[in-house]
Amino acid sequence: MAKLCITMVKSGIGYAEEQKRTLKALGLGRLNQSVVHEDSASLRGMVIKVRHLVKVEAVGL
Image 1 (cartoon, rainbow, N blue to C red):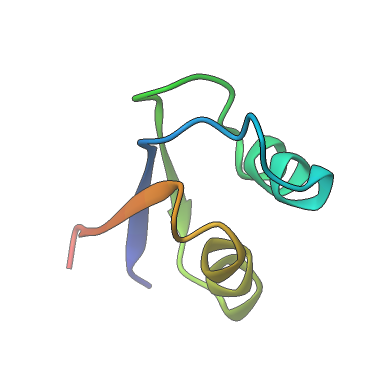
Image 2: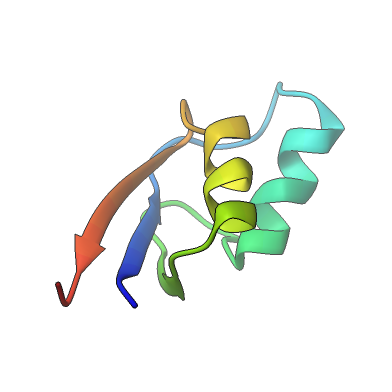
């Protein structure tokens, strides 16, 4: 299965609490921090909620 590298490029300050919690659930706590997760439907749903705050790249195709 493919993996996604998710990088936080913008702070959650000033955005809804739900979006801040989504960033935390993804494992992102500070700017320019990157995490790698297995691609899944639930993960993609989380990324869509905060797409204006993160950058997503495919890893290890």
